[in-house]
Image 1 (spheres, rainbow, N blue to C red):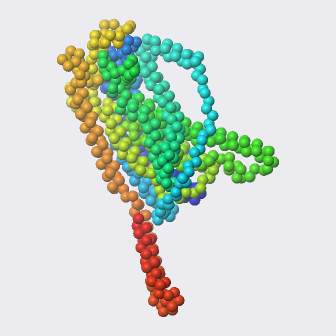
Image 2: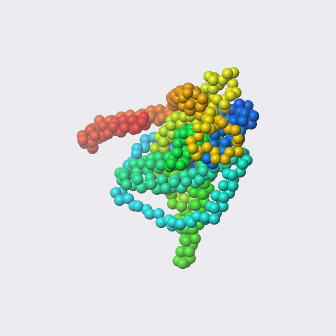
Image 3: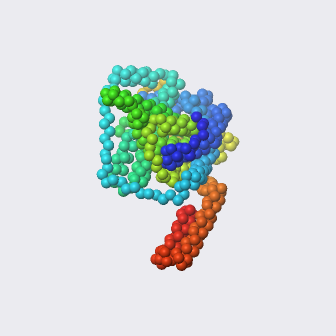
Amino acid sequence: MCKYQPVDLIRKYFGEQIGFYFAWLGVYTQLLIPPSVLGIFVFLYGIFTVDDNVPSQETCDNGLNITMCPLCDAVCDYWHLSSVCSQARASYLFDNGATVLFAIFMSLWAALFLEHWKRRQMYLKHSWDLTSMEDEEVFMIKVYKMTKNTKSEKNIEEDDNKNTKWICMLSVWSMNPDPEAKASVRMTVTTTGIILNMLVVLVLEEVYGAIAVWLTEIELPKTTEEFEERLIFKSFFLKSMNAFAPLFYVAFFKGRFAGRPGDYVYIFGDYRMEECAPPGCLIELCIQLSMIMLGKQLIQNNVFEVLIPYVRRNKRAAEDAENDGEEQRPRQQFDKDFTLEPYEGVSPEYMEMIIQYGFVTLFVASFPLAPAFALLNNVIEIRLDAAKFVTEVRRPDAVRCKDIGIWFNILCGISKFSVITNAFVISFTSEFVPRMMFKFMYSVNGTMSGYTQHSLSYFSVNNFPNGTAPSSSLSTGVTMCRYKDYRDPPWEKDAYTFSKEYWSILAAKLAFVIFFQNLAMFLSMLVAWMVPDVPRSLREQLKKENMMLMEFLVNHDEEVLSKARSPKQSMIFGPRTILHSAPKASWMSMTSVSTMHT
């Protein structure tokens, strides 16, 4: 698994394009080690300090007897806050002070990763003699060949009996009076929805890839390079929206427009918008990110990169064996090579890793273990890609290129955008800012004691609209229920309006976003400024080569001029040749020196 990558041999056999891919993947995987170790320490810090977390203790305290408002109209009953004890403790594992420091570290890590790759790329360009390479534009043919996928469509009929069994089982489960069972229903429904969403993401990723190809073909780009860049940009935009849209919804939209008891927001007339649990949406974001990231990588590695090519290869081999049997001809090596998978380029490999890089950086504040899972995946990914290119795919034509192209610009964009997303995740998704505001502004003794009561608002059950109060309740004598928000209580003049604490905390959240973003950006720019793009040893080597080249060109010019001044040479070559030879040598020297400097 952890073998050394022979990048130079890869470049000699497959060409510079594939060589750059494996070199970049090796650098990315190697630099994932520090954030993986630090992320594990952040997670362990949450485990060791969860018992000392006061908000979690208050949530799990049955003695407080905090009655929460129903989760749905009429059918749902009042419930106790202590029923989400396990969820509150799990949320603290990822929602603690160490997560903020880890998010700042990841911003610096992203900048350091980009700078390190630029240095490595410059070294490879010099080693592979690509420093003076110029882009060659290959024009596309005017008529695009539209390939039709002749895939058989199968109508899958749903098994009504099976669905009926599931509906009955879930209905019986929801009628269970045990509060622990009801608390687990919320998490079960959330996890089931995330798994279904992950499957939809995998299916739509293939659809969006075909759409990107179609959109690029109808644009009719003039050159091959322009076609590839447009296709990569469209594919990345569609696939990134497909992968990150569920995460953005949970992080920044879920539960923020649901309303309050007595004035909920309904969609399609009868359906209430979903809300987050009192501990917040961060634990749901963590589950969503881990399920999509792990499930997507496992399915892509095991199914799309191993199982499907294996099945296709065996199918083609069986068909070729039948044809060879009919022709009574021994199979040659080129016949065996033709049964391999056709080469589709390195763009799918880059796309998979770039999407993973987005998972690692964009929402790392909610899931510090993301770098560790990415590291484990990449260790396997390198070996799978190596085996695929050597044994599963037809040998591609060598393609010369001087860098990884547009993928570096995409990495820079993700790194800068990750600073903004992590700032908003910490401010608006986690409970970090409200906890700090309570500790330093509203707490009587400067501790977190009383935070749970402070973060819950009161609602009078007499203010329920008709038909929305629990029709049959196991809780008797309930006059007030609590809900997660900062609003004035019903006995105030402006009942159920946003309280002063709400506006103070909102201002603190916005201030933290500005502070975090500027701090992370400044530190990232400082790292980029301190780390030179070209290593010092390589810079000295380039200077020596330029000096040697200039000396050679000067000596060559002197030799040409000396021959031009010779009377025999002037009679042999003539004056026209003499006049043209010397300027040509000088022009060649100027061009070569300028090329090396660039």
